[in-house]
Image (tube, rainbow, N blue to C red):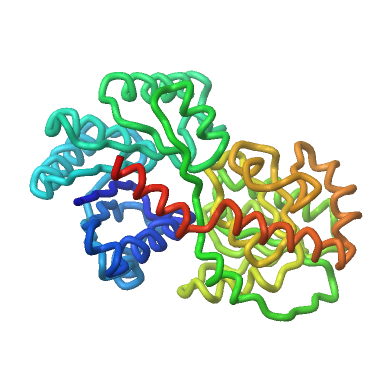
Length: 358
């Protein structure tokens, strides 16, 4: 069976997802029956194509193809023609499209080229859920998702429970949750002791991650230390004196070392698909504080593995509970158990295989 994955941006959590996917499907045993190709774009500045080729498994094929995130008639036409040429040459049995841009271009190309190919689409966070766009644009994006599903067919594979609920209102769909390499992350746990309670987040400093809220929380709780593990274009919005920005790490293990050193993980996102960084924090037995949005609320069990919050004032109560080290350990243990139950990449990638083979 020939399977082709198409994705516009292999960055952030999507990078981790596809790196894990490459090693799972690049495993010699899996590779005997499933030949996997990943088509991706290297246009975004945070994407290093050479690093992707070095880090991903040699058991899968990698093809770089230019795609841009935002609508651009000329560039999108070029991308469509290039994608059509590559897919025609590969002639896959299964085509799996990831995120909105690949979902739009890929479904159109598949409709023109193939009549009986198995077609799947994973939004990784629907575009119409973004809060940095107008209501009009949200309606347009929703109509595009709805009409493309109806016109061009295929099945949506949601990466999280709430995304699945939404997908079912749009068309044919299934649920395969995002997963991580739990053992790998868990093995990075090492003893640490902070004199001051330390709260951290992992990711790019972008509008979606809501650095203004992260900064406001740090200002509200000056007796705690805060760490942003990463960097990004909105770094200037981080001004609180008790926040440390680590910058980017060349090696993932260094980021995991920083993650290990915090006491509480916090996710201040405005929107999510199903956040890989939260799963990794849970695999490291960190209690999680997260905004009560799609994606976050699918992962965090309120008052069991962490807390969901709508307003910053709710954090007074949360921190009062989580300042106790024993309580953090109880929450962290439950967080790891939840990872093993629902977010093991091997189990979840096997679900993908079952869908491909149906």
